Length: 408
Image 1 (cartoon, rainbow, N blue to C red):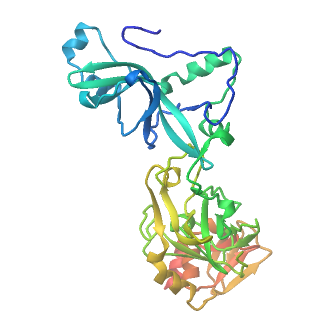
Image 2: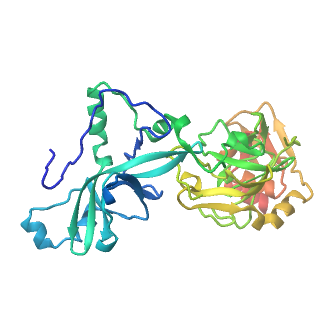
């Protein structure tokens, strides 16, 4: 399908007679076979032929335009007369004539980071260069459009290679350049005060959330993580993999579901515990769950700054939104330091799900899962008696009419 004059489908594969000798300056790159644009800085590797000497140079501060934008730089009449057209697998870089360099084209790529090493991902390959009005236009072939063809062709030649970003980034990692000596992020299992939060295992709650242990029996997290959770049927998992039930859930009174304002909650545990970037990442290198810990480190000590709320790639290469903990210090202290007010709780071990139950005042209800009883949280907040059936995951739930009569 290659069309030489128009440079359509301008791509080819070469099979070498021998394998290359892998070393720090001779390494395979990865291919960016994703239609989603990376936010990393774009780079073009070029050969400089000035003064009779060839040398490799890099061009940055470039803007890549899609094929429709490329067309706009040409006189429509010239395009028609010369039968020139652009297809969606082409893209271009436009330089003003006075800024154009005497360079021959190389790959268009981005440097992404995995495990604190820099991995190049090739986005396009140089096809041709032309002039239009006062502009020098470099045209590239977009590799994303040829991912399947590349894989099938290599397979026919006996080469089975995965182009999945994370898998490719891990190959030859020991030879890759390291970043400036500092780690970009820590995985959750290296932060000893980070906990994961889980709902009732008997329900279909699949939300993934974490939190930060800020006291011996206190966890701070996002309100969105626990708005539908119930005490005692929910629990946290600590760094040592031990679990502890959540005794009480206090969501900020000004939090509204599905918003980011006042998106904070305090979890009280029933027992004390012993406390022990402009870079862009390879897709899949970092996944931040809601309420993941954001901290800064100084002299080997990690200080809690906030909790992760929204944004992609853990905030590397693009903006992410976090909750700044210290904006809510007064409210956190008011919750932690307030006198404990235990609600009166009773358990009948002989009652099961769907059984009829009753409170001491004669109000009758049905034994249901805590998550299926919308008024049980209100009873807790009002310090009213709570009647559990068999265990704390099943509660005696009054009907709406019975709840209203009780309130009267």
